[in-house]
Image (cartoon, rainbow, N blue to C red; front, side, top):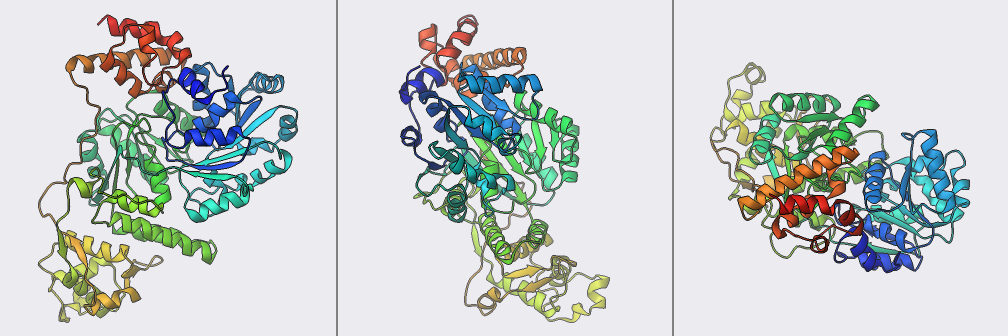
Length: 597
């Protein structure tokens, strides 16, 4: 096999050229030096170690936290004619023995293992007997306690440098702020390596935020407005909510499955397998689902609950549209989401950890309450600047009319103060709107001068305004009692009229604005029909081999086939994603479908 990276990319993987910093990373690794690679989900991180693996003598060991990721990548590599295998608990002793033999006889090019496996049962001694060319540490943010998905077993990976001082190590992640990045370098001893940082922008993803009224009803409206038949992920905070949401989606006619760590392992594995191998499946999950999933045709990621930080949000939404085709990130959130997450952040961590997590959550809330381009705010968080508005988020597609909400905000703050900072938002709104309730009368709050002064705003409008005050830290909510609201020091300038409080204009009686419909568009009915026939053929071939359809060809490849209608194997080889192995294996049958409508 050629040792020229570009020729390998073209002949094996079927891609015409490297993207972004892929070429620079690969050249660096081929000089046998360490590196940390920050590249967005869908940016092609795996090629940064798969191509060098085919250039170097020996085996590349890929350390990954999830069995699903290992299996996906091994299947995809085997389809390309590459000798790759995984070692994990799902394999029989005979399978594990065959993999070990391939490792030792030098016939294996890539071996995928979990960090636990790396340090169990003399496995390090086994590796010492093999010719190791490269260590690739995927999802490297797991090594950092400041990362959003810290995993203690990753801490042991620091010994790789001691046991294999001459073997280069490549750490890869899609999300890491400055603090997390420094922690990765420190814990993995990558001080003498180089950092490769690609842009975080995913322009094919459209970002949308919705005020929570009835989260499930809003989710169904979103799905019916252009996502029916599409594969997607719906994230919920609790296991109970996952199961309830999946069950209700099934009743609404969607093909939905639950996924969380509390499910029996066989059911969890079966649901994940269906999502990967079938088309149009919706998985409702906790954050236990998704890391390392290579499924490229996820058309949407929806959040019914608020993530704890922007790193988690970016990682989770990044699972949509890995194929570069249009995808949507949709989220609904409200007052209770903020209270619930802040309650979780008050757990048993160190004061410094709590401070950092609270700071990160504040950045998440700033993003949620934004009145300008959301992509700009998201990229600013990761240290990047977007010169112009993206044109592909809710604030760009439906620009909000911004009003001065200072007087209303001052009225809400005064009401919280005058009622003793002892009540939740429901009671505060009752007082502001002049509601005649037992609670209001018993507390004699109907005698306050501001009683009824907020009648011009509806209950929903007051809920939104109080949520904004809470999000932006003007007020706090008791997380241990009944959610009583109190004033923070930050509110003083606002109460004194020294600063303004801009708000989005409330739209009374109007339906939720539809997001930009994200769909694959072909230029004619003939192309659309051919694309659907190619998808059906792909699915049939995948089921015969018990592999995911996208392992054969991505949607992007089928789209190019439908548009270009190649009539020969040579012409088919010019299509994106078709290397020599797939051209030989699948070319004739796909050409037959193209040329014989």
